[in-house]
Each structure stands twice: as structure tokens, then as C-alpha cells.
Length: 420
Ligand code: AMP
Image (cartoon, rainbow, N blue to C red):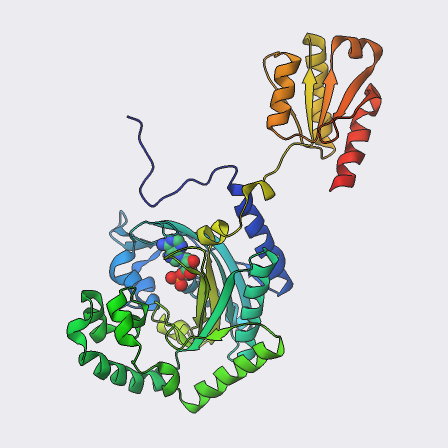
């Protein structure tokens, strides 16, 4: 039997890849307008960086990382997310000294050992944006506007933004005591995972998918009611700015995020169209992360969009698929030789030109042109060659015209150019 790919690792084939290219292209275009530059991080990081950055009590560090010793015995990990690496790079290259406001984006694969299912893979891709160096609520609002503009520009309609504030360590401490007290009274009814979370990371209980745990949480205290005056002011300002831009959102006081580093504003974009894996994007403020990994305190906020889920929402593949501008059908050896040169001349002027191989019949070549959904076909037979012209067929209207040999390239270039 032939050797198959790995579970949770997916090939992305032509037919689907056009959607990926579209989504990536739109991100580069729009994020550029907001002043974000691309920053590329490596696939591997030191395990220590990720456990300190993401947090030892997170699910990612606890059970999902692909970690292995390299040949020198150093512990390395395939990156499970981008934020920690981007902050590492920002500190390591002293970017914060050169440019106090850093705006970066990154597109690439991440690796987490999760149970694969629809919308959840072990290698998946994220589009990340990170806005560093600004503590004011304007940064929160700006990154949310950019995110929602991006999703709207892609044509997604059924997505909604949920926001919350997780407070700062000062307000989270009394909250943590309160939620632990509440959960301890119900601990026997909590699932095994939540019983563990109760001690290590009680906020994460809100992330549990078990219906029994969710039902218990309906009456649980929420962190929003414990915010200190500064955090409350910050959250109010974010909402005022979003309202001023008429950006739709809802406050979900039960939404928390799985990574330990989040502070204050946290958000998620969800959809009703993807079943259980309904989060398209997650993000938030992480003012303590830079310090946690050994740098100075640097306020920051960012998001990560899951590309597999995004692409699932993009709809009909035919809307994104590309097709040739012209198919050159040639009959006879001399016509084939001339057609081969014509193909390259057309490509030289920016026309996507295709042909078949192996001297097939005209009927078979026309079938292939049709299958490829070519806009035009040039038919070049012996008679046409002798008389110095070719037949140009418009595949949409089925109209045909004769066209002088020397005019073909120019004529197709202008036809294709005016369609674009
Ligand atoms: P996170 O980095 O966990 O905040 O996730 C941000 C986004 O990445 C989520 O909202 C998902 O869209 C996507 N994502 C996270 N984990 C996976 C996975 N295992 N497979 C596919 N997409 C994922």
C-alpha cells in the first residue's frame, strides 16, 4: 500500500489553494493600509520561550506541543502560535528601541497535538497581526476595526465579534479567589479537566465544551465584575471607540482565552456555520508578555485568524478558480511548431496561454480547452498556416473570427487586458 500523509496534516490542492491565495493577498493589502509590515519567524523555537510565554498551565504547553531534543540535546518546539515568537523577535532585534510603535503581521503554519476533526488540525495556518508599544484603547479599537474590515472585504457576512475584558493581574487575583470558591462548591459535578483547571487556571473552566460544566457556570461570577478602575476605564474607552465607528460587537463576559498571557481586552470572532469549531479568530491584549520572556514591559494587542476555518467560509470554489485566457489548438506538425512559439509569445505579454500535448485531434483539443474553461481558443491548421491567419473563437459567445498571424498576440493582449 502506498504511504499516506500524517493524521491532522493536510495537503492543500489546486482548486482550494486559490482561496488561500485570495485570503492571503487581501490580508497583505489591507494590513499594509493600516501600517503593518510582514515579519517572518522560524518554525522552531526554544521550548523554554514558549512555556514561559504561553504559560505552563495552558493546554498548549501542557499537552499540545510538538517538542523534541535536537542533536545537541536542546529542547525545541514546533511553533504552536506566533505571538510569543514575534515578541521574542521584537525584543531580540531591539526593534522597540528603533520604533516604539511596532505593527507586524505573519502568515504561516502552526502545530498543535490536538484531536483532529472538521476545522481542527495538527498543522493549521494562522494570519497573525500584532500591535506593540501602545497601551491606549485606540490600539485595541484599531486592531478590531482592521480585523472586521478584513473579514468583510473577504465577503464574510455571518461572523460576529465578541469582546470581554480579562482585567490585569491586580484585578484578576481577587477574581481568581472568588471563582475558585464558587467552583469548589460544585467540584464534584465538574469534568476531570475542569477539576484540574480549578487549581491551576480556573478561568479556563469557561472554555470547557462539556454541557454539564457550562450549565454550572451560568451562575458563576465573571471577571468583568471585578475589574479595577483602570481596567474598567480602558474597556469603556474601547467600547466608545467601536461605537463611534459603528462597529458591531457584543460583550460576552464568559469568553476567556486559552493562553495565559492575555490581559484586559480579549476577543473572538465566531460563526454559526462551522459546527463545534466555531471560532474563526481569537485575540487580545497581552501587556505582560514581553516582561515575562525577559524584556522590558511593552503593552501589546494582537489576533490570530485560523485560515482553514476562514477558507471554509469563503464559499464556492469556482468564484476563486483561475482559468486560461487562451488555448492554442494546433493541427499538423508545422502548426504545432508555430503554436509552441506563439504560446511563449503570448505569455511574454502577460496572457495565460495553454495547449495540449501529443498531436491530438481538433475535437479532443477543443474538449480540453472547454474543460480548462479557457476564454478563447486559437485554431491553427495547415490551411490557416498556408493562408497566414488563424481562427479565434470566443468560448463564451461561440463567435469565431479570422485573424492575421501577425495580429494574434496584440489582439489577444488587448482583449484579455480589457477584461481584467
Ligand atoms: P488561538 O491561537 O488558540 O487563539 O487560535 C486562534 C484561531 O486559530 C482560532 O480561532 C482558530 O480559528 C484557529 N485554530 C486554533 N487551533 C486550531 C487547530 N488545531 N486547527 C485549526 N484551526 C485552529
